[in-house]
Image 1 (cartoon, rainbow, N blue to C red):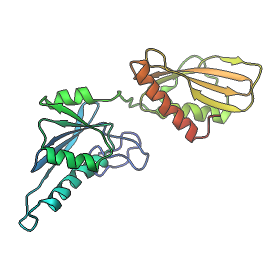
Image 2: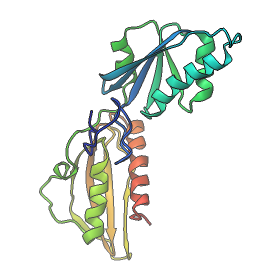
Image 3: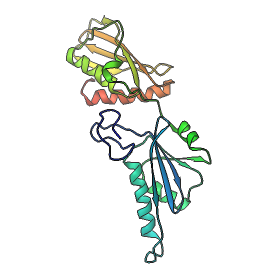
Image 4: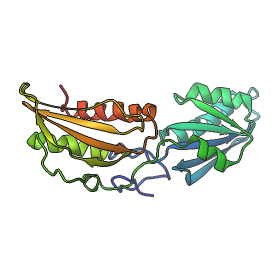
Length: 237
């Protein structure tokens, strides 16, 4: 399997890409009993692959301490290497194994009960991601961007976000004041869409950012992530 962003080869289906630091699996669904764990790795409700781990008790480990630790450790490693948005435990898990797994993970484990795997994935899926090249997300009748190299870099950073569908550059206004360059995403609208505000000296440009979010709360999550990306690139105040 290849990374959906940079096309690097992944060792296992759904692995987090260490080349471009991109998540390829958004949900891990887990069926867990004392002797067998079955994991399903999914993205946008599509199962990318699965893994099964089994264990057996050993006579020289009467308390099963080592056996349980090794068993849960293998399951935890499968989850960590995907860095999913959520981990959902399906069915009626063995409580000893579940408790030990919780202590091995930084991920919150959600309980789904006795529902079908399709229902688990439908309920657990995060925001839809857009599999479009960043440069193809920019459209609109205003082709001029302020800020020169920095302005184009800011637009490229926003376009890289997987929940951004389209960026529409807007008109340029003059504030009559200000200096230097800065870019930031403004508060999300009720429908989850955003605005990229770019300031270059006394000029300001508002660029519409269409996302896959469906509400203000979801849009706010996208806003925080993009502003963090802009800050990492040194494009904010």
